Length: 248
Ligand SMILES: [Zn+2]
Image 1 (cartoon, protein in one colour):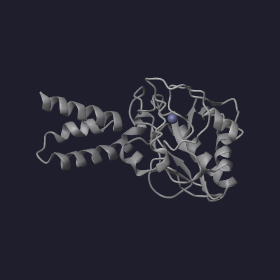
Image 2 (image 1 turned 120 degrees about the horizontal axis):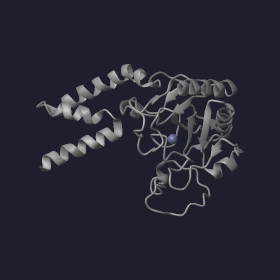
Image 3 (image 1 turned 60 degrees about the vertical axis):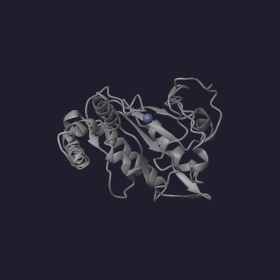
C-alpha cells in the first residue's frame, strides 16, 4: 500500500512538472533497472513530443544555438515546457529581431511557455499557461551600465524580484511568493531599462498580443503605462522578475 502511494505520488509530481514524466515512470516500473529505464523512456517521449506537438497545434521553441531568441535554461527544454502555438513563436521571433535591430547584439530569453499536449492543463505554477497562447520572457540585464547578453540574475530567470511597492497584503493561499531569503543570493545585475521597455512597447504595439503582465511599480519606472500592460493581481505570481505575454 505504501509502495502504491509512493509511486502514485511520483506519477503525479512528474506529470505536473513535465506532462510526460508520470507516464515514463509507469513504464519504468516494468523494468528491474528502473532509473535507466525511466531515463530512456523519458527521453524517448521528449523527442516524440516534438514530433507530435504540431497535431495539438503546438510547436517547440528552439532549445539550442545562440540566436537572437533562446530558451533561457536547458531545464525548460528537459522538462518539456517550451511549447507554444505557431503564432506565438512567430511573435517571439519577430520581437527578438526587433529588439536586436534597435540594440544590436541583444538576445531575448524565453522562460516557461507551455506543454505540448491538450488545452486546459496548466503549467504550474502558471495557472494561465494552459493553451499555448502564453509565455514568459526574461528581463534584459546590465552590469555597470553595460548590457550582458544572455544573462539573468537567478539560475532559471525567475524569482529575482525588482523591489517596489505593490500594495499587496500578505494573504494565504496565494501564488504571490516573495522568496525574501533567496534575494541576497542572486547576481548583482541591474535591469536594463532600454531593451526591456523597447520589448514591452513592441509587444503592446503588435495586434496579435492581447495582454502583457508587469508589476505596476515597473510600469511606472520604465514608462510603460500602456493599455495592454496590466497588473496580474495580488494572488498570482509577481511580475517584477519577468514579462508575461499572451496572444489573442
Ligand atoms: Zn506567465
